[in-house]
Length: 240
Length: 315
Image (cartoon, rainbow over all chains, first blue to last red):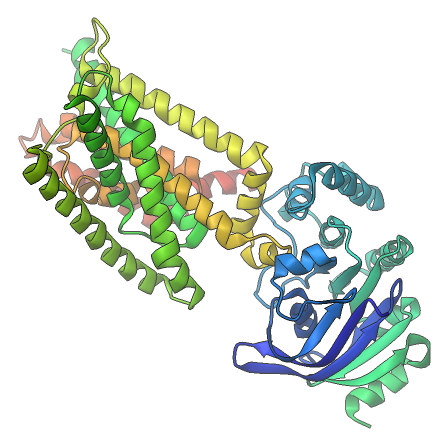
């Protein structure tokens, strides 16, 4: 049974229809890469899974549970973590700038029992040792790379089964982006399934097991990441 | 010649009392703004609710207001203010925010809410007068202040209101900085879309914030009632100066609002004693001084005290 199964999904924001008949499956323990040009609906698909978009028809099933009509907090409880793009569709960053690094992680652990939250916090700080040094610094004073590491750590605080990452390397220097990709591999090795939206197609396909390509709200490709290269991706995007 | 005793009694004590009243009231209005971005014109009415709840409670219990009794009623004032604030949010503002109401629309709705609360208080007042024969209009809580031998009522109020303000600030500091709920509340204020994406029930957090807003403002109503006559307009008439305190404080910080409250209180008393009195101007002009300060603030430092402190930290 796939961890994530989306069937004939039509979704958007209010009356603004974005996704048209999306169907896809993500197996447990794999890194699934979602590629496509700007405006393809990649972030909207993640928002729909997270309960933050309007779903008109279709279904979303995570770990055998239908979450199509569930609230964001219920979806989190079922085991979906979401690291939004920064700035996201709502124009806000993917961290809480006025809170310290530690407080950001505490806020992300809402609904987790105290003991488990403490353990998750230590694990998150262990995954990114730099954050441990900066744990009492306000997030607004972090560099771009440190902010992304914090955002990813926040996504891990509820020990999700599925972690969705929306453009985690956008705007980062190549070395920092490389560190983020390494961290994504480490997270997969922890047994967490990853759905990654990424503009850096080459690097994403390198670490991905499965790939999806979206163009103007429709799915154009679904298959092994190995069988997709930048040339084929370009042709798919151009509609050839 | 400078007389220390006169200075204490005519300037320091009244300035502390006024400042504490405006500081207490500004805490709630600042929280209203930073949580739900509503410049609420019904905020002063929460103080009136607290004052009336105190009055009814003490009359039911003692048949009148006895020395020290207002402190017995303080939890009731806080509860009544909290209940009305909560209902205001749940019944009026939350549904409007959900439908995408603009700040202007919310502000106009708060006007409507002011008249609703005002009307309900007037009806209750009328019932209390006709059924129980209580004269609730233009009452003062000054007789309900504790009595300390050797100290005047104003001096005692200066002490008690300072203690209450400090206790409330300490409790808020603890809540916001030392508890998980406080972190979640600050997160919801800082970045509501992200908070929702992380599964935080932002609307529930705001609803709890409104309980706190109402409780603190209800308590402010008791102190207002010690200085100003208790009527349905008790808070409404103070609202312009509460707005001054909040704007001077920078809108974004509870502590900035408290400092703004102190600027309002001291400027009124100093202005009355050292500008209006020597020039034989009527006391009504007292209001002009804080408003002059808010105009100067908006011209010179529109981000207010909180913004100035934040800018200083950045350098």
